[in-house]
Image (tube, rainbow, N blue to C red; front, side, top):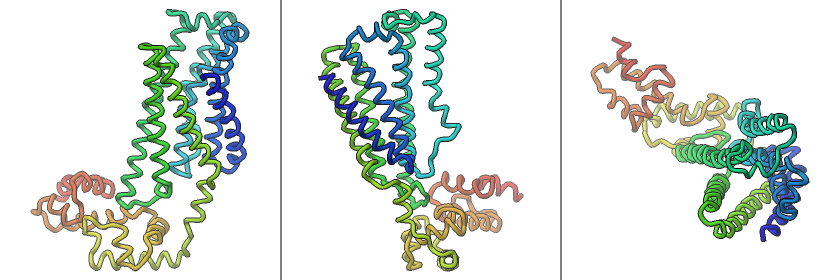
Length: 364
């Protein structure tokens, strides 16, 4: 069963990788996913060789495990790079992202140094020998991979929460143009896959027979999960091309006109002092599309809707603080359109550089 699964995964991943590489010439998301597939092919290929050839494989290629093991440290980082492109079309690998590959580089350097010190006498027997340096190193790599599972999953879930929060606040930006349902699928689906891998890994220490059966389900889940991701990435249009279709550019003169009407509606009423003001309400007041208002604020005012409204509110609170010295700050907060002290202090300090209390004290 294990042999059949490995062959199925190897063949499927190879075909999908070639298709992704073809598309990846103009699409970074496909390229990062293709690299991930290549890493999976290498690691699964080496596992398949050992399954079919048994321990004799290690006699023919004694250093094979010491090359294969460090490669597993690339699994999570390259999937993370793919996820980042799903979060934002602007993401691209830079020098700072090489830090994600540091565990892999350190492991490879360590084994290379050990190979030189042992004068090429590193063997698979030592790798499985309890108490040997090789054995400990393989053990450490396995735990680093599990640690990567935890750290990267937490980071991706937090990033997903932030995007969902921005959507609820009617915030604007490139990150909001992504398919939130797809983001949830890849983030939570991957978290479940990693959790399953954890269970399988620790099950080997309890019951080997049970762990072997559980491992088959884990491998099938991984395979189906990534097959859906690969298929979706191959058949759908690139992220950038979709955005070009959706984001129709409005002439600058029309954007300036929208801003002028926006200022009149916001300040004369004044709508910006309403704590629950949303982009939808402003769009209805202007009889304009939400997308057009967002584009006007982004292009002309160089900020998003939330920051634009907060600046108007902070200017109002500054006037109240200067002219009504005895009024409590929490009353000024509510009158300025803020619901919570934390949001008020954060926005105030962002624009003024001081908290409301510090600013009032500076007036004395």
